[in-house]
Length: 203
Image 1 (cartoon, rainbow, N blue to C red):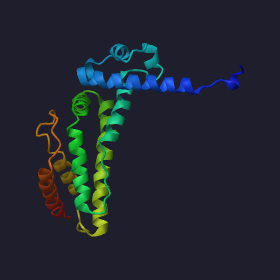
Image 2 (image 1 turned 135 degrees about the vertical axis):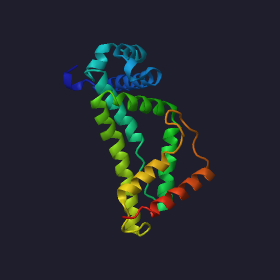
Image 3 (image 1 turned 30 degrees about the vertical axis):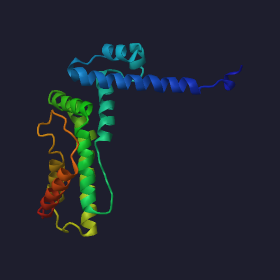
Image 4 (image 1 turned 90 degrees about the horizontal axis):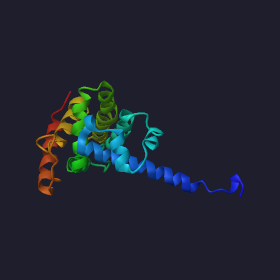
């Protein structure tokens, strides 16, 4: 059989499966032990692969965790576009509430936030992959409302963004505890509070 007639698809799928196993193992290690105690040896054992398989993809623990952070951050950036401010804010709050109810995501993000105080590269990554996209999403949501005339033209976008993010992330009351998803009554009240705060954020 010539080289051109071989089927590379199986190898490609295998590589993807190995990568997926490593990612899941790394997430589990972060959840159970945190960044400081996480080791490549432990990730390899949990994934059922040799360390070489990990090092072919990531040179050390830090770039592996930074890739995981990017995946988690992608899940944490809500950008609803329903056509109305009320429903956009409600969607933003529902999304952030669902994230807060995700025990694994909350444990990992809380641990990495603490670790970032000691690791400048991780701090920069947290800022660029998690904080900035979330803030950009909130600002875009608000700007659309200004363009539709639902918020005043002189809205202080920076202050309003602070209010939207801060109030949407009210729960859980302590950042290290995951919360239950908001029930409809609490959601409605929280959205009304946010809308009242936003209309007060004038330049």
